[in-house]
Length: 91
Image (cartoon, rainbow, N blue to C red):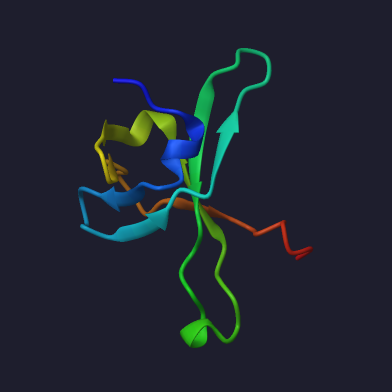
């Protein structure tokens, strides 16, 4: 099975431990030295019904990805996914 990076954006991340829907893949992080995919990025949850924007993004390490299906990506993270500050909006 082949999958392009653009195809990942159409897939939803779901944590198999908690059943949480983490959202759709918005970005991917690569190691520029080796060219390997390091992690996937999903948007954080909305704050106050979306009026205050979103929380920090979820960073899902590639080692936590267990299965990639047609519509979803199952991830197995032992704790809550690490969040990072959303730097795209100048925060």
